[in-house]
Length: 92
Image 1 (cartoon, rainbow, N blue to C red):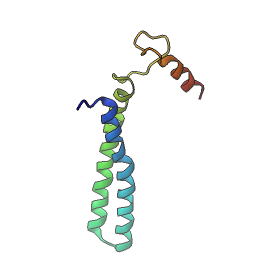
Image 2 (cartoon, helix red, strand yellow):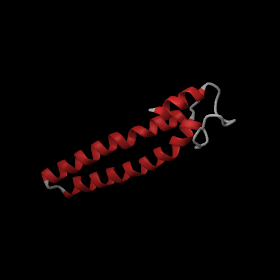
Image 3 (cartoon, one colour):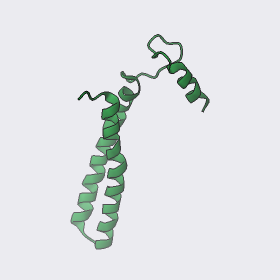
Image 4 (cartoon, one colour):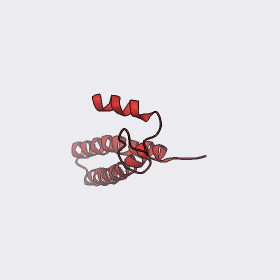
């Protein structure tokens, strides 16, 4: 099975979104219950979520263009057929 950078980015990109919801919910539960252990677990979850956010950010450029560079219309390394999509994205 061939996994490319867009696949890696999409897999990693789910951890920050779901981890932050889980971490802050866990922190709320820790505040409600008054449990220091639950609050510590929430803190570790939020820190781990922040680490995955950085990793998702770093893999994002490779997921879009392969090398982390923004594509511009007319550049020789812009894939064929991508210029119309780039123009539509710039107008949006």
